[in-house]
Image (spheres, protein in one colour):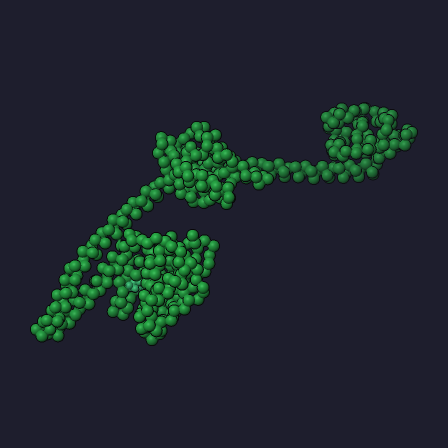
Length: 475
Ligand code: ADP
């Protein structure tokens, strides 16, 4: 321990005192200062250091190791040195000045840092207020809970959407305002296990016992030490979207029923037209001239095309109606079945079917999958230059949540402007004389993929072939 006394409590003293006070092995025993307005005096008082007006008194202190003269007055140093009987170190002149300079720069540096820190705190506070403001005034519902799932905060958006006042719900368990109680439990378990869950569709109870549909993103709330202290849920009101979805499903259903009935009813008159045209051609052949026979042949052709259209339309309207249970099947099995279905088509056109990689198993409606791939592959055989043999490649990529399959051909290709519309019903890029068809095949393909929660798209270059990609989620 070093015992020290200071002469001078001006700027130097006031800077040095707090710094010396921080060192545990230094103790300032006294301060000498004759000017009662010196700024260091206040600090000395706060630190409990006694003050004397006469610096010569310092020589009388017992156990003192050093006197530091901060006044810059050499006379004081020499006077102290003269009377120094106890062998106390006297630091004055250049030594004290150096110490003063060091301390002064250190103090300035500290002050600067402190200012910066203060500014950062102000900024942080501004940011905090800004964020709190956004959360508070967001149109979305933002609710936080503690780890017991009791509501901790409830923003304006939540008040507006659900109709409760925050003081009525804060502190209550979240299940009180959650309509689907099972979903609540399931979701909480998921959040605890996985950290967060996004865009989860569920229902919340509104004031007055109604409910609304919401899309909820729930995350864990953590403190500075990464400990989970609750949850934060941000939700959007999707009631309107749900209503529209329901209406759309209903009107699609109606439309499908209509298409089904009409297509069905058209079958009988079409059969009659075709039947009588056949009779005319067979039994009245001699009574008709060449033109008459030609017109009748065209009637039969048109009737047969219409028959195909009706059959495809019926098939399309059946897709949503007639579903088979989803089972786990290997895609290779599905393709073997497709090969069987398209056997003559493949053989007649000398088509090569190349399965690139070992294919995975998927959960699907097997019959529909066979139908879907048969459509894609028969198109790949059909839309090829007459002087080329069709070469078809089938493969897949294993993505994290789904499989991405592709069917690639060496056909005539599709113009880029039609890439997104060819899945629309009756959309054909070529006339039926050149390449027969109804324009319903790819619509059926898309419907089947959608029924499996998948997606389909195509990439193509004219003259270089097309690649159809489709994804099927893993279960
Ligand atoms: P369809 O084959 O009965 O005409 P689709 O719905 O299967 O009807 O196909 C729609 C249109 O998309 C076809 O008429 C054709 O113009 C184009 N198309 C489909 N598949 C291919 C393909 N692999 N290559 C080139 N064009 C294709």
